Length: 285
Image (cartoon, rainbow, N blue to C red):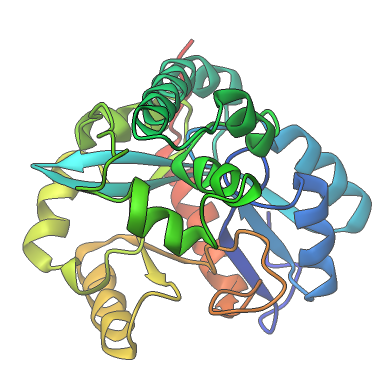
């Protein structure tokens, strides 16, 4: 797409819906984006592209450009890393790849529930599925089920007492390596963008990930300090990575993360389009 939105327009390239752990349906996310004055958004649900078709329909009706996206959880060494896939050209290809990841998340959810029941916290997996609303199951859905059933006061309490690392119902994820995660995104013709690296976005780390095929880095994110943002902007420019950014919005009406809060410039999306076109990355057959 050309720069038709104008240099003053803003975009938000990191948002979630009920297709994963957001609280609003994909069409509602698009309506909120329109109300916030955004020219474009990327829907980047965790391990799911199920909300993209609905978002595209709403975007076409409202005049908001929708970038097909996803957010994958992967590991570098022993550390969990989030990787955004943007500009996915072939959603069916990535849907097949993501099926195994969603199955893993569901098995993990069942194991968490089993651990909760074993310690006397009588929540059911059906309660968790109801909170997921058909989307990919994650720990936030277990937390919401705990709250709904009176076992926790809020999400933080649920994680602090039951779901966080080292807590009685914690279950580690099966591991997806970064090389495989990048390959999954490339198989769908997309750009692989390192999500919210913060202070850990060092030159050495980015250089190593570029060797695996990394295309870009999330520069603007609510979890970044001003110095993080400035450093990542400089490193991305020096290393030839595309810049990206977004609010990581999950649907809250207020709070520390609000829709469009990062004021990501439209020009960043234009530059991503240019990189996408220059790569000519064909999706896998």
